[in-house]
Length: 352
Image (cartoon, rainbow, N blue to C red):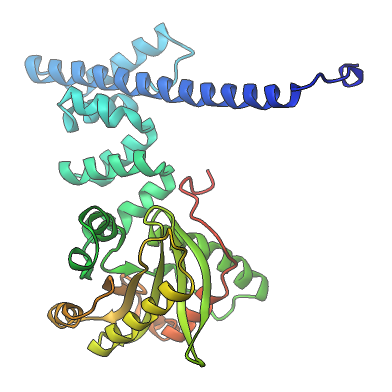
């Protein structure tokens, strides 16, 4: 019956505004609930840890405590002996309450459990916690980044950014690139059917963008550039939403050679002249090679005027000998990445 009532002027705008306000409030409420829950768990863990240290309580006390708490709060989840042990672990890992309030409580409890299980170094654990909050990583994405050793790879590429970019942009660009890049997700067996390959390429798109990092939007493969009547083709072209610039990626199947830097420098000049908007920042280049001598790469970039990074890429961390012949070549890599639908931007939530 309400559909028969004529909507007054401005009703649609008001409805849209109220919907947005309600959604925002629900998100904030969810964040607040999670924050209070993590702070509660931390305080419980702190008290358990303190009693065990001061009075020598054994592990069986935790089982008894779990039973009594679940009897008192039968509708309350998360009071199992295992979870109480995680609470104690949380308090032991984060003794500073201010860090808990400012960082740890900003990510879900499940994220914190994974960090306790997988990361033992305090500085590394704090880095992942901050990154998960800043980028909105799902639990699966967080685990993927930990397993790939992102902490040790982030910002490690050989670059000339400090010389070719302003300080603020240079720091951000440096943290955008890694060394090495991990492309082990690009393997498919010979028995894969067409449908499986098609689905795999879609999955590879997400995985590749996740490996590149937040902010990359896919533009195209073998992008044609015409300069003075001659044609040139860029392997992979992206646009970075935070850096506000094009990113040109060149793939090389062997070891880095100094002449690669000169060619990529030319591509960056062409992209800047032909594609960049006046409001864009200068394009950045990234050379991905199967191997590189760090000193050779550093010297090769000294006379280059455009911002370029040089990184290695790995197709697999460890592969049984009987599968070594199934590794894709660099041509296979280019073909798979080149068939990606675009444009596409990484989903920081990983679809969860």
